[in-house]
Length: 213
Image 1 (spheres, rainbow, N blue to C red):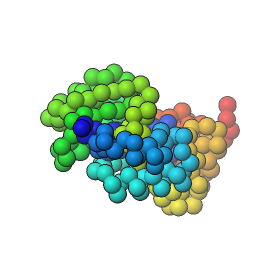
Image 2: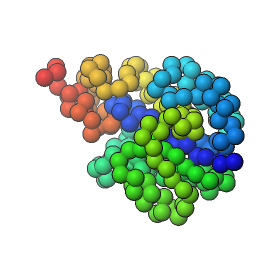
Image 3: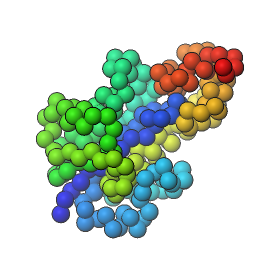
Image 4: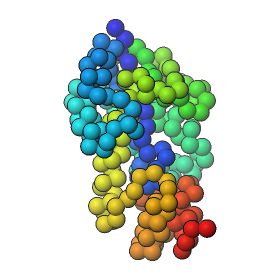
């Protein structure tokens, strides 16, 4: 029986909100059961269903969540200037924490960037676990479960940020995001975006303009 750590992120493509990387340790013997629960790529689930499954998964299995809220995310990105390096470090931190706390045989993530990025980050942490990076990794149940707990945390953080500002922050990076960005800048000043958004996105520049070009 393999004890497998699945790891995935949420918020990478969203202008507003944090970057969340989740890891969860699920033995292969439980795959059929979590599939029966409906655990699959969180992008195919409604927000409410993701939150329901998140609660069931976190109550049952060891897990770690690494959350970079926008201000911290922006500071780290300004230093690294490379999203894949930032992601690799967050993935490695989650995997290392879980593997240190619990016996694990293997870690699996959705593939992004060069495979050596995560492998190097794991070596730097002294974590020698076998690592596999798979295209469309959410097809692996443990990675799907990780995507669910990461997305649920992203949704909760987005709700908190929306309540704080009194503005419903939209997901994604489309036109409505630019409209809300301009609304926020008009109301609170440009500094608010460092608290709420990932400032290296093109949406940042569009949020500073009175209208879209």
